[in-house]
Image (tube, rainbow, N blue to C red; front, side, top):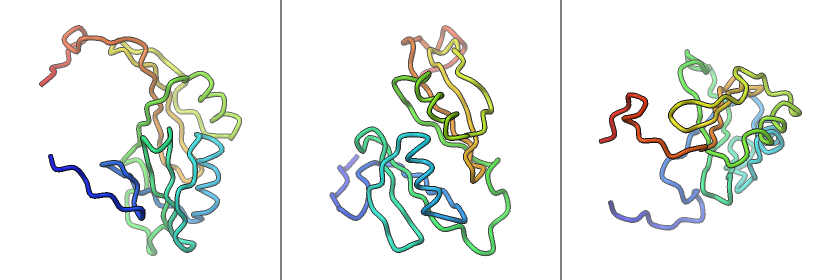
Length: 142
């Protein structure tokens, strides 16, 4: 794969989810407070780039299209890898994220929790707790 050309106007990651909210500024503030994102770039009042983990991950918060398309949120979710799931979950609960599942360990070597944000987007946060061969739990590594 050819390295990506640098551009200070876009985040330096390969995949960038764009999430739509009715109030972009309020959504960005909440995501920063609840999940530890930091604001990278504000574009007018309709788009804000957010980074996490020093820029290792990214998301864009954008103005919800009008009229809003069907399937507002159950058709997608966002997964973010973190290093301290218990502390992160406490932070999200303090910010009043709606818990869908508390931190739980899984046989594939991850501990995860899921929440819904005020815009209805579903977020799963995952912490690696062991390096497990996928064959041990029925996965097939290609």
